[in-house]
Length: 71
Ligand code: SF4
Image (cartoon, rainbow, N blue to C red):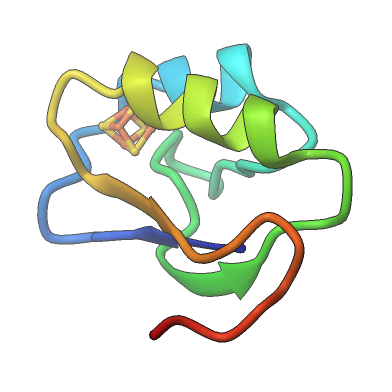
């Protein structure tokens, strides 16, 4: 699975990092580090919780939790 943070939408609430500290990191100004990255095995549920916590809907989580390619 993958996660992406849209830096253009992020306004720095830090809720994602507070909810899912293993998945989301903040920069020195308190904004989520933008971009796309792979989610570590076992962190999928945490990633989804972090994405749900974002009031700006700046986070997208997608892909198969078992790593199978999308159809
Ligand atoms: S919760 Fe959303 S708006 Fe806040 S830092 Fe995380 S991605 Fe940015």
